[in-house]
Each structure stands twice: as structure tokens, then as C-alpha cells.
Image (cartoon, rainbow, N blue to C red; front, top):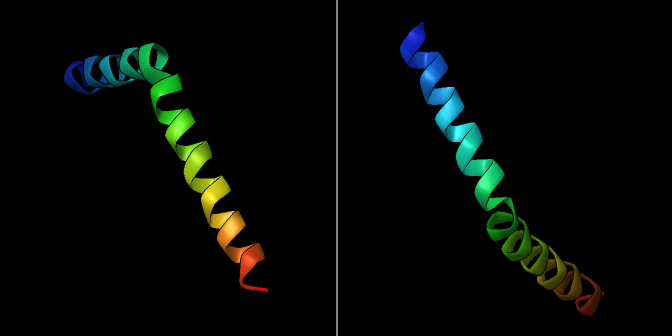
Length: 41
């Protein structure tokens, strides 16, 4: 249980530090997909 808790804490810390590095590419990818969808209509 302690290992699971410490692993969760580590992942949580990584997400806290790097959330913008995940969010920006995801937003760009979503915008590209939306643009492709609208362009195909």
C-alpha cells in the first residue's frame, strides 16, 4: 500500500510540474482534428 501511495504521489508531482507540457500539445491536436473535421464537411 505504501508503494502504491508513493507511486501515486510521484505521478501527481510529475503532473503538477508538467501539466502545461501535456495540455498545449493536446490542445493543438484537438484544434487540428476539429479543423480537419470542419474542412471535410
